[in-house]
Length: 287
Image (cartoon, rainbow, N blue to C red; front, side):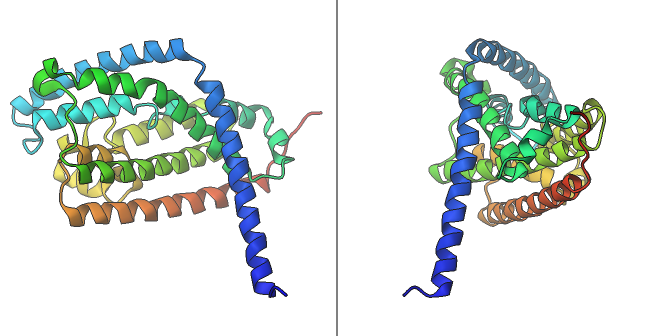
């Protein structure tokens, strides 16, 4: 006879497996739907090359004038090309517009009747959209930007294999932080009649604080100290700077990973509580 504790454990285990399968199903549907837009991806690649080239010319002039003198030109160029390759992971242009439209029109009522957490449905859809968009753009940028004829302006290899592994770990955690932040934005949209102002506010805050608009290495020290107290510092900034060797101290990297995990837990719990609170007050009108 199995004890009640073992039975409870098996039930919880089966329940978790079922939730993971449902999450992966939503992810797969969104991924396959988004990956069909290859022409849009091609035009996006050209856009990333254009922006990357302009940003490299701009920041090279800063480095030549003595700004951010701890950043070398190869490190800066690698940072820029990595940002362009993974742009749609960290961009609000790749959030799920269907979710935002549901919040505006009341289509959310269809999702609420499903026996699955709304938080994880939206999470899976947004992840599928972002991964599909990046998978079409990243490889061509990596291949072309690593060509030797770019000289010091090319995308360099990781400083070592360990840095590459740490880059992947922090990149995955950064993606989790971005998704948790986007989920809070979705919840904020549920309270508003229009999503444009809220989406723009969340986007501007994230782009400045994560180093997407201006690399954090170019910011003054007092600003960097302030950003380290927020989850934004631990998004794309740390992953790319570990890859290019700008952040190389083992203790600092360990601290970064711990703080990424802590911020991920905090933002996820906050997002779920805010969603449950909002869903308890939601009223869908119409018939």
